[in-house]
Image (cartoon, rainbow over all chains, first blue to last red; front, side):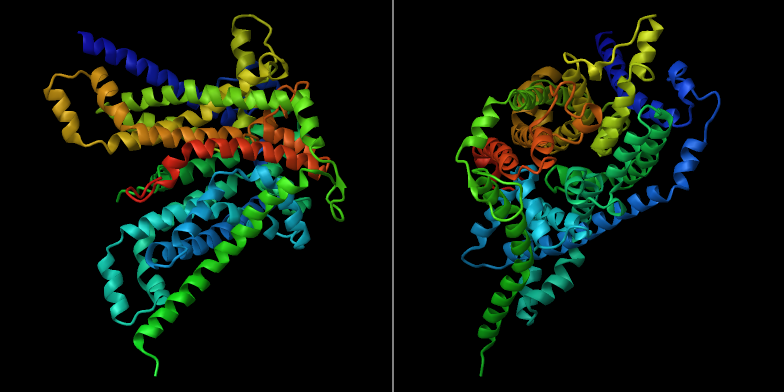
Length: 274
Length: 299
């Protein structure tokens, strides 16, 4: 039958593609368990002689944990302030009528269109002149600044879809804007809060260029910087490098499966479906 | 006595000021002003210390456009854009159309194809640096299987960029597929039913109904793809670091190596301004898509 024939080829293509995606991940995780010699002769199969030290030596390496901790500080700090500032701003844009509303909204949108690389040197000088170099703020503050635009769009879209009646009723009852924001808007916005948080967290967690430019002090390195230093040290000792790669890969995959819905929603314009 | 109305008005102004100031301040200081400053510094030769004094006019730009490596990086960025737009996106669309229907295992394929997107770019690139390694990697194994000496693709001037493009494709086609699937799910079932009743097959439906209705979604993915391509840096560093012989730089990696590492603020800013102008050009093209937000709350 024609349809079956077509379905057959469709599955063939899809499984082939799935293989292309999964095999590199699989060989990396397995490669972490192999000796250099074995990597040369047996890159696809299961390890013959499991070299667990590649992993365990990392797990007792204090730098490894330090870099993960630094990245956590950057990600959590950035996310906290992006969520707070962007939701406050979007709240004003969505609910308060004033002359410059539209203009200011577009002002923030403008920032969205330019990668921060365009102004990386002046940005570095600003951070230096403010005396932030050598502190976590050197990474956190620029990340907040560049995270605001997209987050404001997402929040504003969500706030505007909330029923107007709640707002009017609350204002009539003498509720101020600030009270309304804290008592109604935020508690009713958990899906969008989650979406923005997840996007900002992952963006910060994976960011390489910004910390690379802002951080000189090794005790403040983020994990992507750490992994590159490690690569420099063990240039072709792939077993060690792949173990490091795999250790960062596993939490990312778990995180993704737990929060897939919010990641996708954020990337498709904040259309969160409950 | 103050009236309730006056209080409400006062509260409104307080709110506007208190709620807007943090975001406006940070955004202005760390996004808007640096972009303006980049334009200004690009006319100077300056190492970032003291005040910029050595005014050189357009010299930085002149040097830039005579520089072989920069022209190469500009070309590379355009190759990346071209491959993304004309190969990656249509492919993502094709896959989205295939697995958005009631296909068994659709959820599985969707998740698998999306997986690379969540990995850090650095990690993705390291995995592929291993795969491409002619001594140890998968490429070595495949060539070895046929009894051939494996090439070092990343060290080969002709193949290094192709190798990078494959990694970009691998990492990013899933996100575009996901965006298209979200768009396809928004198409009303009635329209599709009606088409079916009228005797339209899957291919006719795809071309006459689904793709035309996906245009706003496609625009979004094109925009994301353009901006992403122009910012490419993290993937290049672990793979080639711009080599061999500086043939695989992107504009941002060029900026990093020749502007930031050597602390040439004026020259680096000029590179930034060129990237900015390309973005501006794209943004103007997309203004109607991006700025028109009142009817739909999406982009």
